Image (spheres, rainbow, N blue to C red):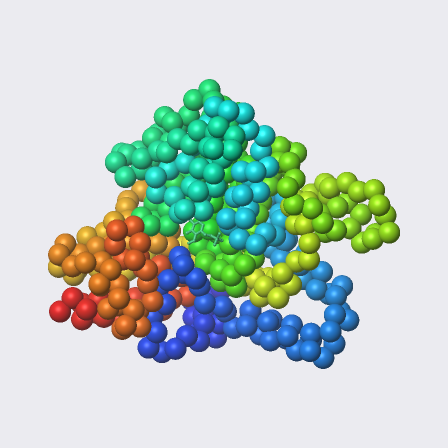
Length: 384
Ligand SMILES: Cc1ncc(COP(=O)(O)O)c(C=O)c1O
């Protein structure tokens, strides 16, 4: 696509209010026009035709699975389940594995609560030990994580990009080391999928989860859950229903077996409304191309960083060196309280978040450069 056609596409798909500057994709992204229309069409169809075209809905669902599998380079669409959210998928993994007392799980101290609480919950129930890598002081985050591995480590679970600092881990390095020790590798990729290239095969990932409402630009409540084929049987099932069996449509049959695919983790009726929207949003990302999306996202963050660094008193929390970032740029001011600054920015229609001990800006591939400059001008106003 040429720069001009991309510009036109972005203006059409994201007609955000002129005054609003949306730098909050790491929290909840806006929906593209095509996804909004998919929801409108789906609502009309339900009103006028009910479920007459249910078979078409299933085709849309299958298309979404296929698109998601492409987005993360899964070997097969059969490795994709649709779950409610990232936390649910993490819980399916945590409560699917067979634990023995003393088994260890390695996480980091920058994880969002979803990727901490679930592992901590195993401590009292199964005697699992949670080892926490301190990333705040580590010179080399991957080495620090690997240092926490022992003979008892069963699983490493990390966010591909930390929600507060924006630190992007080298998953390829981690995956190779972790798998060479026969340990399971679980990745909370909610801050990566849709913002940058993700490759579950290259990075030897066993389990990966990402809700659709951030960088994938879909509605809340529908998430991608990848389970590598070889790891499928390592998870016992804890949720059951008509949908997760092999011969799904045959309601008269009384014997059953779980599906051979990741669909075994989907116990009942799917979230069809969100499916229609997310399918369009992911379609847009694939149409633009995830490499192009990643380049644009990184350029936006770089541009923002240049503007911010010209403002006296501002320092960056996010490490922009060595490609250790994607869409998150967190910063703070030497003498101003971040919470207060965040409130002021919000009142000036700069949508952002207070995270990682500072203010988090998270632009996406379509964010116009003028809006990046304008956000920093409004920050300067807030500092006056
Ligand atoms: C890294 C990370 N993991 C998980 C979540 C929560 O995901 P969900 O609501 O899909 O469970 C968030 C939300 O901000 C997040 O940033």
